[in-house]
Image 1 (cartoon, helix red, strand yellow):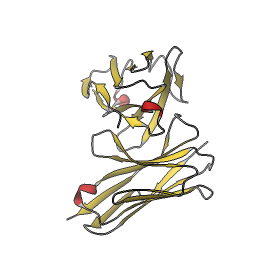
Image 2 (cartoon, rainbow over the protein chains, first blue to last red):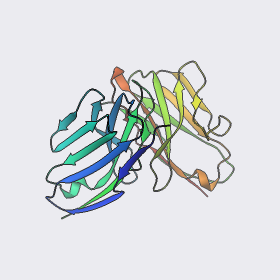
Image 3 (cartoon, rainbow over the protein chains, first blue to last red):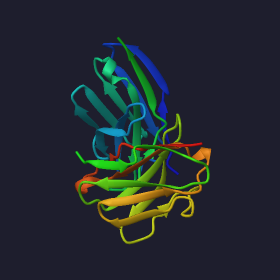
Image 4 (cartoon, rainbow over the protein chains, first blue to last red):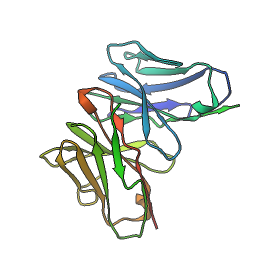
Length: 112
Length: 114
């Protein structure tokens, strides 16, 4: 059974620092990995999707890496801003269009 | 990006009653998923809903408690039956719109059971 872990559970940084969020999964037989952002009381916004054959994906200040063999992904957010404060979730799937298995999330606070 | 809407956005219900949550997608989706997010927790899959067949439930979730309908490729409903305070959660639907691999989520339905 796939298990996804995110460490740390919470993170507080001053504005301008780079954020590093970690995600690990126990079964390397994944199809893709997705990073989401969730604001309090809201739904999920997809940030980045990495296919199992890819090593990284970039969008603006966000960069996500994937090491499938070791079961790890890292989300980097450069030059953090207070607006980046949210919970970040990673999730993996075994096949195209299939269900997601989520990590517990990392709650991020960026202090002005 | 996909547009997935849910109704209601929130509700406060009495113990023992039932609530039906609607999920509408702006384009056809083969599989739709229903998740539950309990307070302070991550998302847990309740069931996968395919058109024309019964939903597939995850361990710990049963059809009598969470009946699901999927009448067409753009719409699904989840009913939370005989509610108790333990059912207080955010319920979210999702799907892979347009054949892409990205899974999009609705805004969620925040349910409080008194």
